[in-house]
Image (cartoon, rainbow, N blue to C red; front, side, top):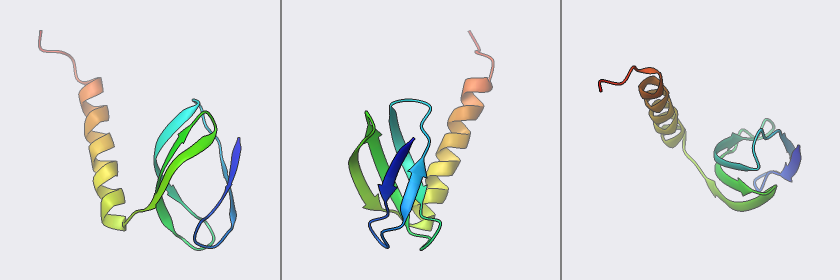
Length: 75
């Protein structure tokens, strides 16, 4: 578990990682700030604001990737 402070309001956010690296969206429960975050080895590498449109596009891309991972290969 990693605890980080929201750069917008200072609220502590607890992040539970299944792997030592994570790159993706993070939303603060208090101020509803939305960020694109990159974590490696339980250290924040980057943190930048993200719009709802960017979040939706990222979620659609992940859903599409998951669909192709489940599809049987045509070989």
